[in-house]
Image 1 (tube, rainbow, N blue to C red):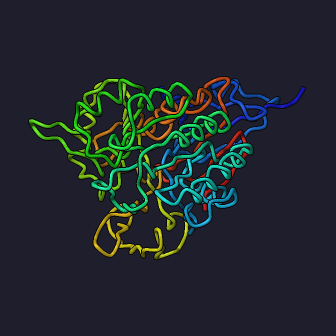
Image 2 (image 1 turned 90 degrees about the vertical axis):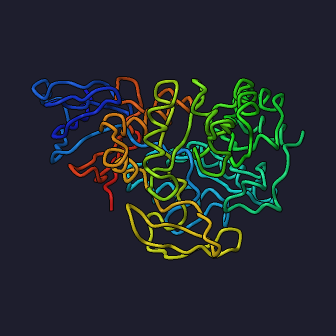
Image 3 (image 1 turned 30 degrees about the vertical axis):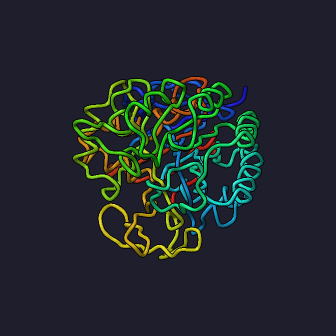
Length: 388
């Protein structure tokens, strides 16, 4: 009889509740059970952790770079693998490499790379295209001159690619897409997210009802909440089915605004953490470029602030474990809810049925956090890697 692997010595959070004095049993990359420690015997290969928490591996839906690399600079599979490896030391076991607005040729290379990268189990679980279908009025750090409407050719491409990779998220502005296009993309399995948009609440509701599933980095690069014009931000909070990614770094959104959003959001569990991470995460790199424009790294807070020469925020230096700590310390979240916002909720958002929980039949994708919520090790399909 083949011996099963078991992990003990840490408090286990299965995605729904905590288990004390227990062991996580797994084999062939899948979780088999959570048992009392007393039930573990000679037929188990046991690893004992030194306290802390064993939780589902983190899933990041928006990652522009890491390990000193940006996806836009070299959109090939090896870049995607390197970004995933850089974020793994912070507890992220699956992510969507994210391409910001660029030329169509760069976009097409990123799509080809994602098709190949998602065939192996190296942490790349899909692709996020944040552009080029954004609104120049809400360009953020993107190049407005490359922004344009969704065309018929784009529709054919996105629908075809959605059949070939695990998850395809496309951030589009309401100004650059029609409700019919949203409906067709959603029906084909593309995850449509509204962002970088000056949409009115009425326009946003029209696209949500057509199948748009989310908004990209809530509050950032979108029409804000006014008492007579709720905007895209207000519509996202009011619509019970819409998911919202949030950048919990203390720079992109004031913690008070995030606390208000957490209280206001209709629909349970529809806010989740994203990092919007750039090249410096997981490296000593002090500076980098976006579309040929230098970005400065200003230290301070839980992570550095990344800005263009004109002061525009240019993504983040955030990692997912830091977002969890920020959620507990600044957003008044319970530890369980902060962990769900980094794992279970993004898994549900992407419709990944075998991730986000440490329960029988699920992938053995896990993170070990110490008592201060810093990542110490991860497992992907049961294969362990220690954090640097």
